[in-house]
Length: 492
Image (cartoon, rainbow, N blue to C red; front, side):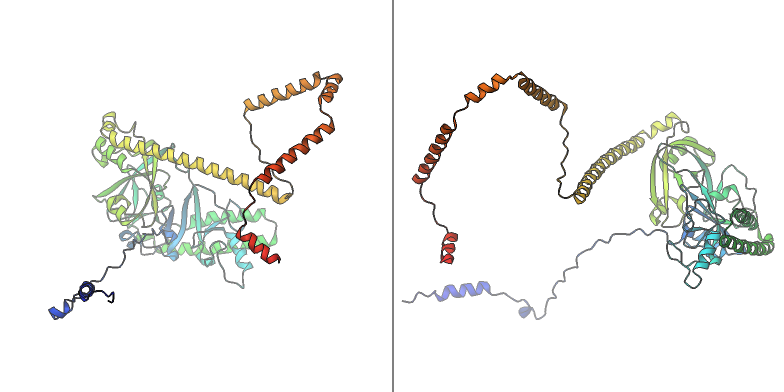
């Protein structure tokens, strides 16, 4: 008999493997479900400022006549460089001219890219590259003499935690970007809610008016004349004379502009609705934290009753990247361009608010204090780890340098022994020295007599070698491995 599987079992297996297609019975095909593509979470990249004219650390004085009303409606519109007459910049550090590497600028000028130069240095640079494309020596943007604007650099102190700062109460009309001090009358002329750059209110504004161009140009002219007296080099003198000639032309053209625009100024209107905010008095973009504002509202009841100036110790500084969400959340930032970075400062409110008011905000204040404490501990740990790693890297670099200088000599690793072990080693050495000093000639002679003769030593060595051979002979011979067999065949 043939050992074949039965036909019934074979049919059962085939039926199990067969698939039933419903399309044959229904008369139509069911569309296959399309699997959705994998979801990829895109990282939102925060774009910074694309133009220097949107920086909150700079103030731009616009020449007249120019269309300036459009900047109220949209603070994100970059200024037209041709309309800018002067730039003021706040800084916490010293700038250096990239050509002469001097901290004191002579008739400072700024290019459209934002880099600063001495006016005579730029003229010499343009002469040296007369047959080449004029590029900024830092960022390689185009440089033209007509695009350089006068600049005033104002040095301010950096705001840090623990410092005591003074903040000024400001008001801003809704729908406009100009800021004005509360409690201080506006004596300067105002046009379309923009104020002159010489005003005390101009420190807090990004856009101001240059109603008098002559003053800044005359200041630069006096700087150039003083520099001309000091210099003796003919090439430098020719560059300064060229700069003086260019400044003289600018002064002549400024007279025509002031005469044309003198009658276009208007007084400031008195709007009924304002935004109120506290900003640091030197004009840096540091604003009072919303929690402190809530405490002051609870204390004084209304913005109009707020003190004009407050002084307090800085507890925490929070950097805020201006986005649409932040503007909807806090309407006070509507005058700042999107992409700029400002800071919110929490200060100690003791002396500004009463004890009862601070007790009402104890929970929030304690939560923020605990968070600061945890962050401080975390930062200290990170700094310790960084210090350890830098120390280890420095030691490794020193070892490598020593090896390359003299590779034949091994570099010993110094190990510091504890003071207890040092004392024990000293005691052992002192004991050995005392024993050696106490030995006499006769004691050394007796030690020699105690040693056995050479013949006895030789006989002992021979007996030990014989015993080892006998032990090895009693053991089984080593088994041959595959490697030994292959080696034996190759030898043949």
